[in-house]
Length: 282
Image (cartoon, rainbow, N blue to C red; front, side, top):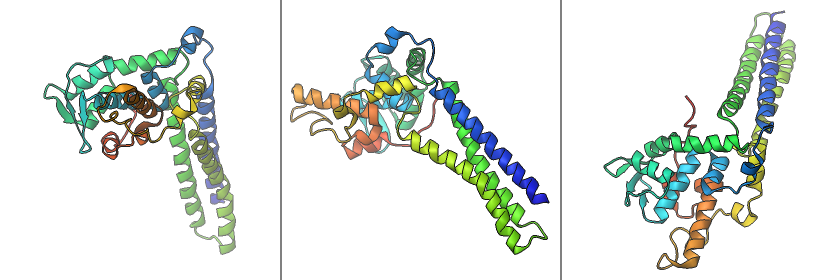
């Protein structure tokens, strides 16, 4: 019977893609054997924390928010960035300023994309990979490709099931039997996707198991910041003093760990949100 051949194809596709995804996940979770102990044990900088928690664009977000709250850069909710002070305080800030261009004003997304793909962020990623704290780009790409293959196999199973049910000469009772048999490989593919989705909520796609442990070891008051205390978006009444500095630090760490959702100011949060992609892809 032809539907049996289609069922075998469905099973082959589901099992092959799920096996590929399991192998890619195991490779991503495998700790490196040559991690330099002194580097791995060193404290994380704000940019390193941002990369491990959210990747290259999270590093750019931290730099831009830092410049914004210190009034060296203006992030507008309309999607434009304006340079107020052309002197960057570190390499990432200087890269942001160069990405804006000599006119000192540019749409935010091109600036974010150019900075995220710049050499300074790549060097940061290489250092973290070398320290065993970040997942190498090739491993992460393989995991993404395997995940996409599982999704395609689920669609293929559905298509093959429909084709098998619509084959001429099938009886109504046999249709239900055919659909039930195709439900098994479909359940395998969907179960694999469900497990991946559930697990991905508890770890970063950029951090290795060692790096994730470092993120998890951050003080819980910092890790839990979603809405910084009053004054964190710009200081107190005069923007100075220890309270303003503490609020600024809390905001920057929250952005590094949680991204734009940690920003209390809705206009600044709107300026940071937008379509994100992997700057290392393609």
